Length: 335
Image (cartoon, rainbow, N blue to C red; front, side, top):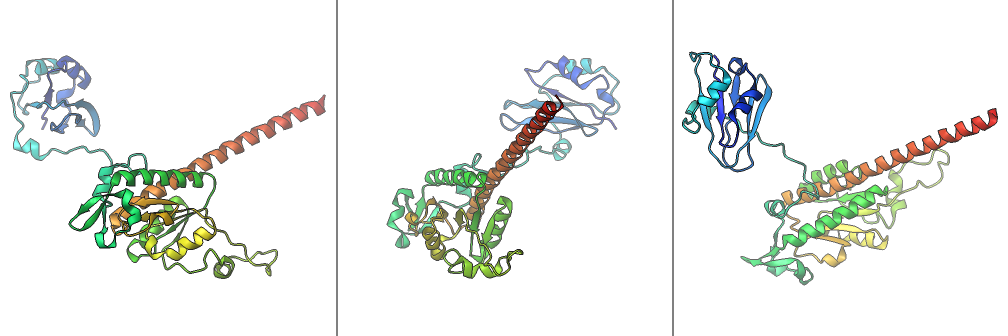
């Protein structure tokens, strides 16, 4: 059964519509996707799995003219021109078969991050006013029901600044260490480190990991095959990202002793002056911590990709210069 349909819009020439659909429009199986809610949405018509037409509505209603299988074979131009627009209403059967075409969700990064996303993740909720740290006064919007409310405008600015720092460190070949020792955020920490091609500490922070690295990390390092008796070489991170700094005071103290910059989510009960790049936000919200971790990991991965591209470009230029030098030297030797 063939059910052709005609879309009508005041500012669209019907002859152009018929010319775009083609003369065999009545012989094609057409599925109409009906959408007319707000400005900017699209109406798509599909036939045999191929997109035939895409119209953009401007807040107007859409008239649909439906012809049954017994309709005579009328040319498309005559059908559309003689069809009165906005006089028919889609039936219930047509509305039941409607499918909304929604765009694919984009990955969250520092560029498309908005205050509404931070608010939906619950990053604005601080702790009770009895636990309030006076050092967080510039980041507090106010209080409600005895709870400090964090100003998300500052959160967005400080988070983007931290993303820029992580991106530059990764682009210069630095090591990024993610620290999240709570059981509910351990998986988030591992995923963030995997996406950023960095390292993570998802369990308890061992004291002396940075200040006594030869003793703590040396037993886990691979010995030198040329000199097995030599103590194995250990490395320190170039930047540390902490998702729960209140439980990792020892890690922050060791980072300060080793001049390692730190990025941490500082709630209303934590002193942000102890961190190099604080992010005022709620560190108890799992969704909020996940959002911050994804954004920072995406920035680190962007820096790693840029570094790889620069290295490849540099390697290609060096190879081209070597080839040119070899050709030049070969030409001189032949002469």
